[in-house]
Length: 265
Image (tube, rainbow, N blue to C red; front, side, top):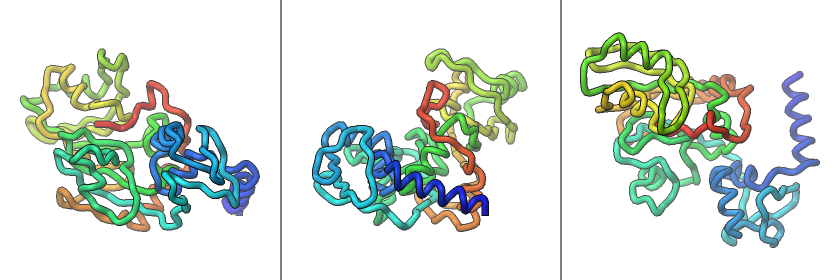
């Protein structure tokens, strides 16, 4: 009953306060909030026939259009697990010939939850839910992502300990968080991150004199890559979705800071 009361209260507040236009577009599956702000600033969004401004709010009964086409909130919640092959770029920008959206060719508007470096492989989620993207990606929420890594020479205890304790990355002027690292072979290990700095694992290894030969993301929170073939996608199951919602229930979507850099391994 308490949860239901909270949800009803949130609905009433949404009706009285409206929804920020970037959130409206994101939840309608048009684009992420960040992309929405750019489109709004470019004059591509209108509310009741008037060009919208960043920060405008949408109230019940208002008509929203994007590039001249009416935007209707997407009722179906889409969440896919995709095994990204090396060479595919995690962007919805159609100017990138190897963009992930054209590769998957899904019939409805979706966008990736974070990124994987073009050279990296493995699990990436795609959705039409902007709120889900924000709650998963915020580094302050300490959500786990797990990777299998192969490097160019034999591992040492010194290297493994350094990776676990955290490494100062001069080019980003940040020290990585302590993390779980388990050796799985002479030149392979798994690592669990709770932040997503740009090329984080590669930079960490390079700082220790190692070079990453292969990097595969095998888990995002409770969603596993499993035996999903490279280049294939599947729908996240209802049980997985329920557990995911439980894990991110208390996650916040505050603006990013230096510590909440986008996921981009």
